[in-house]
Length: 402
Image (tube, rainbow, N blue to C red; front, side, top):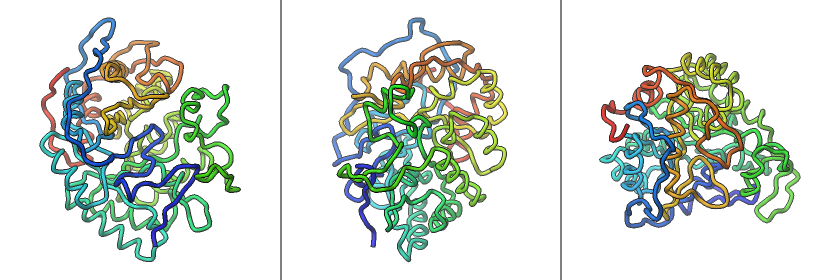
């Protein structure tokens, strides 16, 4: 029997809403009832850089966005206006009518969905068959991959109340099935290191955690009523070990480590994992602020060494009401005026040697970043060629706006 689970005051809504219950630490909004498609908000004027500049006219594939089905057209107009030709929608679904709608509405405009699994079924005797049937149908319906949210490892629980681990052997059949059906696994494990540290003014992500206290994974776990459970959150290190164990166990399954391999604070760790596991690639979603803090020469060498293993992603999110989350959010969503600034900071990071400039997501920390000045051949791989190869996408050759 599948059980509704509650951890840390967070409600499991997947069955009712058709999406993962807390899609990520960055405030993914569950999709509600279908809406009439609308254009993007125009209640304020877009910001422009102080010195407008041109960047490489290379089409981009964003492998990590979150878009409600009803806003497919609006989202793609925004993306193409910023040079993103194709996007992969992590706000997908289990197979069925909703996934079919996501595939059909996105196919003509270049927005392709991932599919989801219900990890509440992990304890069921028929989990292996459920995973096999679900992922086969995902592939048949046109999903591009399997998206796994951080609720696996930090939300779903066992019968005894302990957290269901990312590397729990009972889950092996799902990851094996993903490999058999050619579904790359975009997996978010853990969260920023600072979210596992005390939520005090000394925490460098204090502003973000103050706006969203439930994003903290430090100390004791409480239930949905705020009552202590007697259990503690795992450490950041434990989460990364679970992630690595999972990748190592399935060499025939391609893993896309979300948020720069889930370890942007430790590029040496990511470098080692990429060397050790040929089935692992990483994407950059919502972590340019973190990786941009590292020495630019060191990071340029990293990107050049692993040019075939890094995918462009942003974690750009739209709510059903049309609001935006650009990497993360404070007390409220971002206005549409920040969208050009958000993208411009990405292109500036990848393509220029600029130093000490603002990163894309101010709420994530009060620091500046340094550009990498990557050569064009590396940019081509990161921006679109790697995604085409890994997800089996048609080559993109045009871009609306450089």
